[in-house]
Image (tube, rainbow, N blue to C red; front, side, top):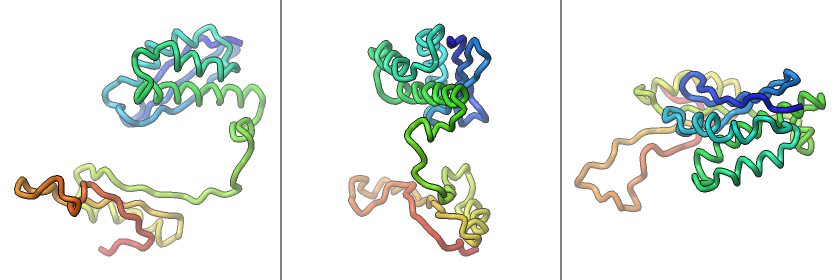
Length: 184
């Protein structure tokens, strides 16, 4: 079995997925870090740098491919986009191995650690909304005890007359955790 293609795709403008295809028709999907999605750097790194390293190689030799993806382009920097791009390809390779062996990835990686995973809801980023607006939908999650809720609150930036170096001035936005429903 050989890798025939490696491609990165932006989905909904906020996620980067990598698809690795093989000559046997098996396809693996992996997700890169969502950082720097809009810049196109991660997609270009996957499509331009990692694709030539992987095409023609055995997708089941995950460790060998990881080291090749890490060390061959090391002069471009081994932080940030480089590691995010490798992560997407690496996950896709594990997906292929799971499909070939018929085993879930958690089994291939050593087994299940928990039988249940507590759900977690996160709300933040704002998106131009007023703070009470994003807080309304998760109230039902908290009421149903679906899991912890992470709410990011915003404070106005300090004025120019305020010392930016003051230890008493929080850096906006800061995070708080709440398990009770927000008040309307």
